[in-house]
Length: 83
Image 1 (cartoon, rainbow, N blue to C red):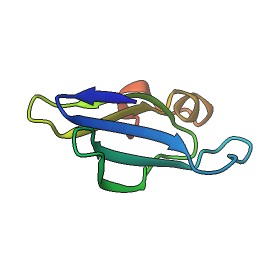
Image 2: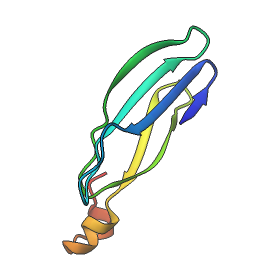
Image 3: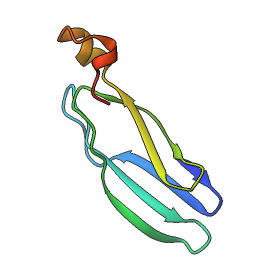
């Protein structure tokens, strides 16, 4: 969960995740009006881990994840990871 001005950005598990996977949803709220502005599923590679959520300097929601485990297990060089 992260906030910026009147906006609140939430990422959460929508169901019990399978072993080695995640089912993540997101919700963008206007905290002042107590209104959902947008919601949906967060696209994330099954081997990835969500490391960070936040807002850009223009209030665009942002997420960041790395595929360290996937890259190591499949012999992919660190600079070739698909983020």
